[in-house]
Length: 103
Image 1 (cartoon, rainbow, N blue to C red):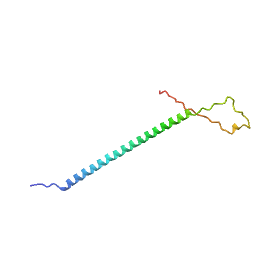
Image 2 (image 1 turned 90 degrees about the vertical axis):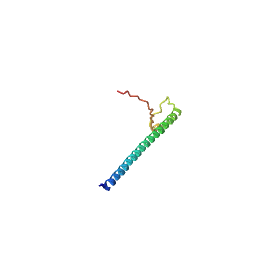
Image 3 (image 1 turned 30 degrees about the vertical axis):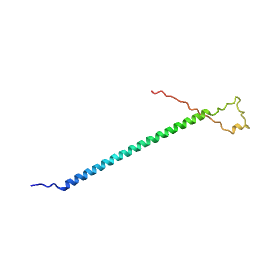
Image 4 (image 1 turned 90 degrees about the horizontal axis):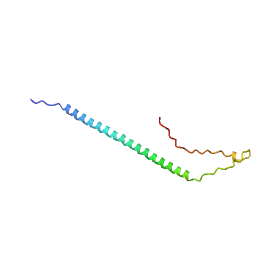
C-alpha cells in the first residue's frame, strides 16, 4: 500500500520557487541600478562644483591682477553739451562676505 503523491504539488512548488527567485533577482538588480544612478548624480554634482570653484578662483585672480582705474579728482563737467551724458554711469559691485549669527 503505497500512496502516490500528486505531480501538481511538485510542479507548483518548483514554479513558486522559480518565480520568487526571479522576483528577488529583479528587486536586487533594480536596487543596484538605483544605487548606480544615485552615485552617478553625486559624482556629476561634485565635478560641477569643483569646476565652478576653479572658475571662481580664476576670475577672482584675474580681477585682482587688473590695473585699478584711478578716479579723477575733478568731476566731469555737467552741461547740455557735455559728452558724459551720452555715457551711462557704471556701478561696480564688490561682494563682501557676510557672516550671519545663528540664533
